[in-house]
Structure formats: structure tokens, C-alpha cells
Length: 290
Image (cartoon, rainbow, N blue to C red):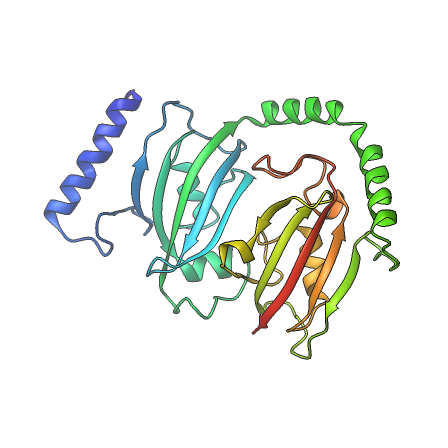
């Protein structure tokens, strides 16, 4: 068996040999047998390789072929067998805890096969998209469930506290609209006259997420970077925003109050920025619907 350091040296030798013998379709990257290009950016200190059934928490970013960022998030998934050659699951399986790498994968396969969505207009057909992944943690299914149960036991009283805090906020802000069936309050700021959102539309929004005390935890406005995504696809927005945006038209500007069950739930956000059982507020402006 090779040690972690020996594997790292072998990878570097393969990359060096590859670059000397031929020019890769993507400079500085090595091509796997299944058509993925990879470039190992950082080797973690922990030799903890994931296997099928393990739970991975990771930081992931998507870029177009010319390095334009269009998705940035921290997520957790259960690692499963790759459903087809060249899938993004293969990328996760190549990395250990604390590793980070850059990959080029087929954009058509990712959108059509992995997330069951149409290819965005800003990605040409049959092109490659860049995916950067940093593995934050690797946990076995048993370890994941134990930690989850321990956490839920610790926060079992927070559900009642959240309801009280939300009711106090509604009363203090004199909110006089009825919530949706899922508990979301919508307060319109401006009504648009553009296209109604439909499944698979490309949506561009500006949003600002706040706690009930007014503190901002995320803002595209402050970053001056409107967020664009394919409506109805997985791993894009939280459930509450999915519901809220689905009822908007281009040009709408509205204020949404969301209970935790429609926001970051009983676990809070994967980054730790939003605690468990926390109601939040989103100021959303729908800029464009395509």
C-alpha cells in the first residue's frame, strides 16, 4: 500500500509526465480515462478517503470555461456510485478530507444527467465547465447519524423558542398579511409587469438575507453580484426562496419572512452561519426571467 505522501508524489509525477509528452486540452490539467480533467490544488493533512455511503461536506464553485463564476456554496451530500462515466461523483471520490482540486467536466452531462436541467445559455453545447471542490469533512453514515441525533437532542427546545420569536417579530413589525400554507409571509414593495417564473427558466435576482434582528448574513447587493440560476433545479436555493421566487414576475420586489422549516431547518446552514431553528427574512428583487 502506498502512503499518502507517496500517492501525492505519484500524482505530481503523472502530471509532470503528461505535460512533457503531450499538450492537454486544458493546460495544467490531467485527463482521466472517463474524460474528466483534474488539477490537485491542495493535499490535506488527514488521510481520510471517502467511500460510498459516506457523508461529505464541501465547498464547491462552478465556473464557465472562461472562468466566470456562476455558483458558490457549501453543501453536504451522501457519496454514491457514479451513475455514468465522467460524472461529478467521480470528482468527489478522487479527494480525501481537506483536499481541494479543480476539475473540468462536461457541462451537458452535468446539467442534463446530474441535476436534470437544461443547459444555461451562457454555456455552449458540448462545452466544459470548471468545478472547484474543497472537502471539509468526511463522515461515515453511522458517525453522521450519531452526530445528528446528538445535535437534535441539544436543540429540541429551539422549535418552541423560534415560534415565540417569530410571533414577536410579526407583532413588532405590524405585519398584517396572512402567511402561505407553508408559513411564508410576503410583503410586496414593487410589482413587476414582466414574465411569470416557470420551471427551467433562467432567473437573475438580487437578494439580501437577514436575521429577525436585522443583521445581514448574505447579500448579493453588497457584493454587487446578482445571483443567476435555473429555476426548479436542485442545490440552487433553499425551499423558501424556491417557493417565493416561483410566485414572482420579472420586476417584482418583495420582502419574505420564512420559518426555519422553509429556510435552513433543524440543522442550520452547512457553513454554520445560520443556527438551527432560525426564522429569516429575505429581501428579493427579480431582475430577469429568461
